[in-house]
Image 1 (cartoon, rainbow, N blue to C red):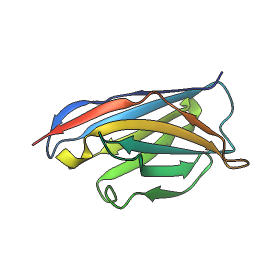
Image 2: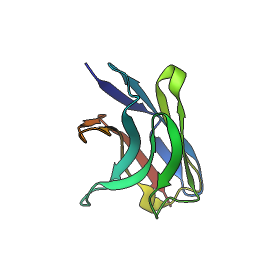
Image 3: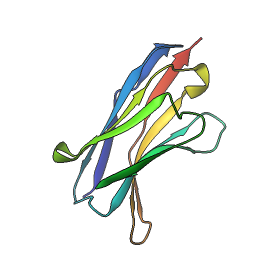
Image 4: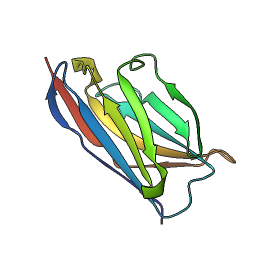
Length: 118
């Protein structure tokens, strides 16, 4: 059974930092792209960052590029999102995602809340 379990969310002041973690289990993810998405109240889910499990280029959404950093520890099946210079508009539920490069099948975590106060 595939599981993606996020952690690390919380309340932080504007300008602060947080590190989100995603523990992936239940299968090999070598043919998957790992990603972070977020969804703020009343808004659509938004792409944050992504990279293929085996490495290569990291992609970022326009609103986070230069402030957020995506990383992975493949040996421990962990995916991270380092968030710096946080803004109130970064407030959202952040989701870990694994998408198969073969057929696009998605797995999602349950999400972790990030709240940035002004």
